[in-house]
Image (cartoon, rainbow, N blue to C red; front, side, top):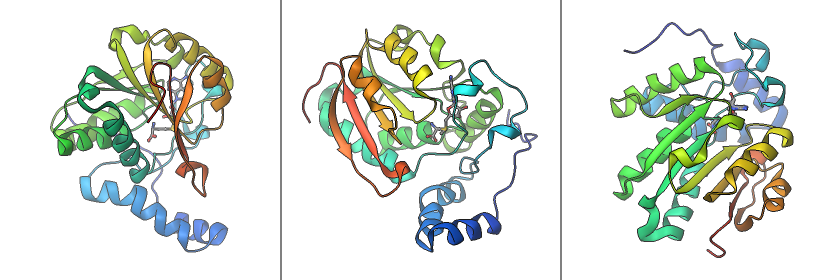
Length: 235
Ligand SMILES: C[S@@+](CC[C@H](N)C(=O)[O-])C[C@H]1O[C@@H](n2cnc3c(N)ncnc32)[C@H](O)[C@@H]1O
């Protein structure tokens, strides 16, 4: 059943005005194309960010988490194309997990890309803030008419082996180095590819034996993505 009773701040013209004042016309324009438009086209609720001060409950490790904002559409699509090309016929052997999935934008965009490319893959999202998962399932219903695979879980508790033998992990800067260290330590025994968007603590991933196999530079942290792997060495 769709839940529509979740109250989150609305996003309006003043937010665009603030962006314009801070960075000029390019940022509000890009923001519209890369986040707001997704919701208008898909009748979803993903682009509105949520400051941590407006969370209704405080999960464990909250002080280490970043606030919710959605990844930009073209960043997710670009990563999909890099991974699709990299893995070729092995693509479907991997499970995809967005760690810190929030309202499900990455899961939805990845699944749409799979459908378009006629590829199948097990796709999951996990988050430690339950109200986001209700929104994610609601969004999933609107796009795919099912709830999708979303789990209420702290990333430090994830048993990666339960998701599959080979993993693609998506991280859109969900937490600080303290949590990232624990997550990568747990993950590193699995054959894994890490897509790190807004990659502020990449050195921790390298420290655990991963090699950088792809890098996309961008003028904003949001438009920078690095891809690491512990078992594939070249693109
Ligand atoms: C910047 S948002 C990214 C949302 C989504 N991945 C995207 O790119 O559209 C970071 C998300 O990580 C979640 N998060 C932070 N710390 C977490 C933790 N320890 N375990 C699970 N989720 C966490 C937050 O609740 C938030 O939804």
